[in-house]
Image (cartoon, rainbow, N blue to C red):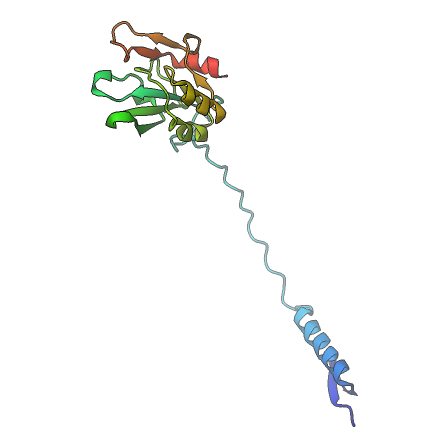
Length: 196
């Protein structure tokens, strides 16, 4: 049996060669790969202009607004505020970064008022914690400020790793101009000092 004849191209030289089938396939592959990977006579591409990476804009985490004065190096404060008609007027809501309305017992609602970028002078009326506060406070990485809460609720919140501030040392006091239980007010600056 005669071996097939293959033409091998080496530069500009063509040479007929007899090879076995395995050698023939190997030769074809080598020739194909060398052609595909061979030197290209085209000039190298022009270098692309250097573009500097834009500086990322600082964003306040709770508002999504630009942090023109930087991001405060302090934890967020999440304050529980009553949201019933008897609790009005509520103080400090206009300074909040974010307000979450929570449904509590009897169809009533409470507010989880979050402060990070700015702190008001006073927040009122501060009310008690609920187990639903865990899902609201944990993503902020902040401290929860409340007038207290049931033991089992406070244990569940503590088990979630949340700091609960609920004493006079944390800036809570009674506002004599309000009726109980809507008379608990907060000094956020004192609460922040207690949280850090």
